[in-house]
Amino acid sequence: MSGLKFVAERTGDGAGQPFLDTDNGEELMHVQPGIAVVFGSRPPESPGTLYITSKQVVWLSDTDRSKGYAVDFLSVSLHAVSRDPEAYRDPCLYAQIDNGVEDDESEGSSDEGDVSSDLSRITELRLVPSDPNQVDTLFQIFCDCAELNPEPIEEEEEEHNWIFSADQLENQEAEEDSEWMISPNSTHPIGRSNGDHDLAHNVLQLQINDQRFEDAEEMDSDTKNGDNHS
Image (tube, rainbow, N blue to C red; front, side, top):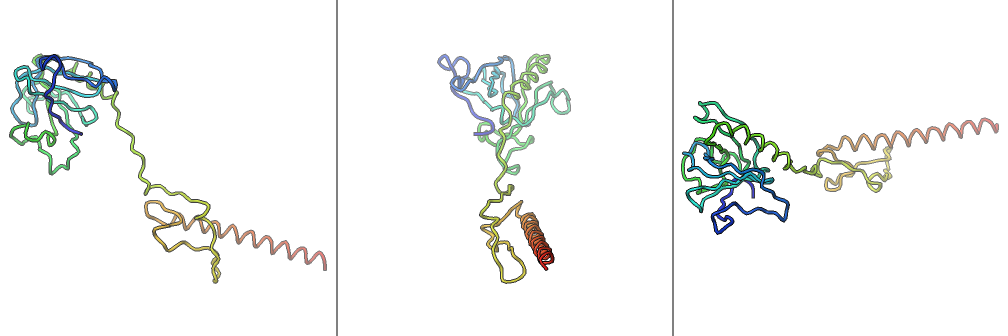
């Protein structure tokens, strides 16, 4: 699941830290108390403790033990230090969240309401430390953990690749002058590059020219041999 998630479980009978996925190598990297979290333009949540792990960012409320939020680093599309009072009144770490939802279905920074109503639509958050000097430290830790979570490399879609097989390049005899033809069946094209058959045609034309060149050489050789015997 991408985007912001609700966290309700804690270690130590609900009074401790968030649970970590240690079986998959998740480690606690930094703990920062006195952090307020702000979603979009909503009022800040009451101060809590920030837990930064090697895989995610978790904020747990200090006043409401049942309230907490988490977001994977893979869902954090951007993070930056914000000190502009016109953007927000206090120095903070600003982050954008990729929630996998279309823009018109996501909540913008100007929306109001209960954040718990639909976490999957949240696209912006601010982490506001009680000590403004901690902003740069948080930013550096975010950078380090982001490097531990690179974007997965997506394989290029098959439709953007073109491959010629031996069977596809077999010539088909024609009754007319042309010795080659491209299959009219679009479901079995001889060559494909983003849906364009020009490349396949050029390859086939090269084969045609090579074949005709060989035929011309054979005819020339036969002519010379005939002259030598005369």
